[in-house]
Image (cartoon, rainbow, N blue to C red; front, side, top):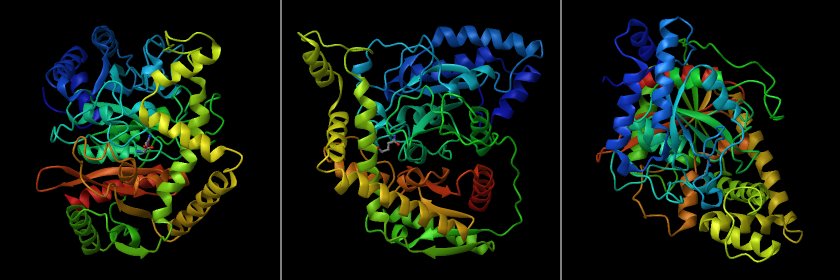
Length: 474
Ligand code: GLN
């Protein structure tokens, strides 16, 4: 089976009959089996995918197939899909099955996508290495001693290792872009409000966005446009119609803004810096403009993000009480001990840490000092991000400050793990769309990505600038 980078290439072959949906599904299932030690999937829906493939092959023959006919997609295990288990990689949802389907998932299904399984992730999307999972760690296919990134690690690995054509992740502070960078693929966090969060298990509601992992910009754009648009279940959605066409005007000269504090950061890995500098030089040599800006708040972004997201998480996760969903402790004797024991036994250590942190910053004694202050800093970060984008077409940053790190390397040190989000949280704090594009590899062969961010609502610009980066870099 040839390896496909674009939905359109698969569809050309499906139309001509040189490949069938059944063959595609078998190919991915075989890869899933051969690479099962990477631990990318929490559950594989093999029989269902096979049955669906037969159905879609028939639809293609009769000319009635949807725009994603035969495209095999994996879902991060924090999205509801009716009558299928969903766990957020947590013991607390053990045995729970979705009662309805997430809007984003439903829209892909309507276009005849084939879902192949639910992917491993950090518990409740809290993490940057996919090591906080009740299903065990995921391994990076480029080097199995390294993490795949997180929290959507399984979804990134599934695409990188050809276990599906594309996949969905969720991004609250970098959980799509960082694993995309660590796995050498594309990952988009859309504008906040672009894609309905209905059916996404909430971590921090004012930050969370669903987005795609893919091997091309075209596929990122296609999936995003299908998933986006109004939905009565999510009041935070943008009111504009979804973007369904974009074009690349290659000749225009563009301005990229680069943050001084990021490129000169002491934590920046030398190979990341060298790769990024090479890209800037290539852009300049082709007549594009690089402007440098100061962003003194860079080091405040991660603390601001953690105050606000843990506060939101402490509220969102209060519903997992042992009463309504999934796991209930066998050792409980009354209502209160049901709550306490189910939560104590059901949640992993990182989730507990964040619930406690969030409860602390929201407590009446601390509210002003932490939560309210962080809200103000968030607003300043939004305003300053807007100002930079008033004078440039995009902000360009390395996606991560280092290539994929070793399994176990940061898992005992939460603060160093939190710093893995240094360059990605800005887009979530400000609500802007941001994409990670694969650009190079380290000497050891580990992928490196760059991140592009444009103004809110301007995914079209983001796509065409991504194409530009790709061309300049090739
Ligand atoms: N690594 C970040 C965190 O642990 C981001 C997670 C995410 O985007 N879901 O919160």
